[in-house]
Amino acid sequence: MKLLVLGNEAIAQGALDAGISGVYAYPGTPSTEITQYIQKSKLAQERAIHTEWSTNEKTATEAALGMSYAGKRVLVCMKHVGLNVASDAFMNMAISGVNGGLVLIIADDPSMHSSQNEQDSRFYGKFALVPILEPSNQQEAYDITRFAFDLSEQYDLPVILRMVTRLSHSRSVIETKEARIENKLSVPDYANNFKLIPAYARDQYIRLVAKQDDLLAASEISNFNQYLEGENHSIGIITTGIAFNYVMENFEDKACPYPILKLSQYPVPKQKIKKLYQSCDTILVLEEGYPIIEERLKDYFDIDTKVKGRLSGTIPRTGELNPNIVAKALGLSDDTTFKVPNIVADRPPELCVGCAHRDLFDSINSLIPEIGDKHVFGDIGCYALGSLPPFNTINTLIDMGASIPMAKGASDAGLFPTIAIIGDSTFTHSGMTGLLDAINENSPITVIISDNSAVAMTGGQDSQALGRLIAICKGLGVPEEHLIVINPLFKNHELNVEIIRKELYYKGISVIIAQRACVRLSKPEKDKRKELVLKRA
Image (cartoon, rainbow, N blue to C red):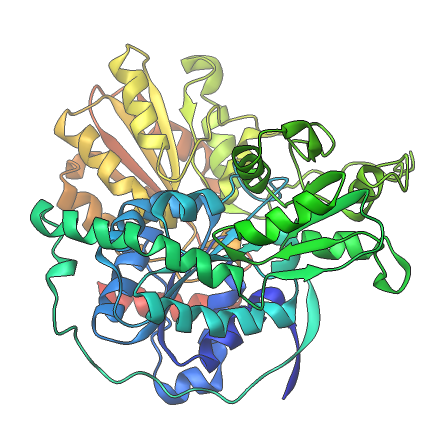
């Protein structure tokens, strides 16, 4: 069957056809569509595949490991910074190993289209000593996903499949294969490897290290690592993933005159690299992200001036690759980009008209002249746009859940008053523990949870906090007299300003829940959320 799909959707279809029994994920651009595709899949519904969103990436990874322990194949999806959240579980599952095939899809975001950084998740794979796969197009994304589960079960290891924004969000036709049946329920006969006390963990780590030669040998013969001959040996090109496409776009009929080593399976195959290195005058490394392979080449060979890439300055150290950058590196063009006409103006992102965050920022800004500037600590979500004009309300944005601990830390240093702004979904993702710290010390900070009843920034998925925020805050220990719900509407502006002012000057912990549904939710979606709130009450 042929399908026109996004790269993310090709991943999802590949996982379904590989026989998964569950997908675990937290929404995060550019990875969100993978889980959404599976949620809407007829096959997933027929098989009762687990498709519910997780509270954060760490719980998603741990739940996936539990499903793998039971012998089933399972997919975990997240964006690159989500792997930071999941890293504790991820690093340790490399030691414990897996039972059923477990594949982690990590969608990196070079050029930071919707992220705080452009970290390269291949480093995590190298760090954990597990296999990494990196497709170059949609068909390969489908094929390599199916293969990833086989690889995982062959070596009893989790496998990272790395995507990048351009491949995740571009479309192409793929051809699918017959869907595989799911694994039977089967807990491991010998389960001590999942008990990571030092006595067992030491043995498991020795086994992990011992597998490295086999993983390298598998990479050397992998069909996803291709050596393409070329007549002109003045340059030898090493490409990874989507970078291969940027090379081929520079040559008519994709007839590149230079030898190319296209890499999509790691660890890096040393023998193939050695062959290219010895037969070419210069080696140009084109990889989307950090110079991981380029660094490895400098470890392999003594003469590092022969290797060109991001470290040498031949390729820009930051940002995405594109065909023009590659053309310049190959000496085919002097220009790295087209000039943008003056008539085209920048259009920065902005909050939707009618967004509840707007009215909340207006209320806080009314108090800024009174409390002083630089007292508002922000978090990750739509409301992060409160750091930009016309609001300029938020002073810090670091990572998911950082607003409350940072406000507390500033308060510990003597800054008063301090405000932490966090969304409902981010609060349950990683804000609750920071609030507990503040509660335990009765820190004089005001936490404002901007509750729009959705994971709005990634498409309006259901929030895990829906209908539970008051109960969570009470359970953690927020005093009832300082746990207040407001409706952020223009008509309530003066009332909301007074409520916020009163809590700001309270010398202890207070929480204000600014509650109004996202304006982009349809009426049926709002009605569904109201029913869920009543159910959870």
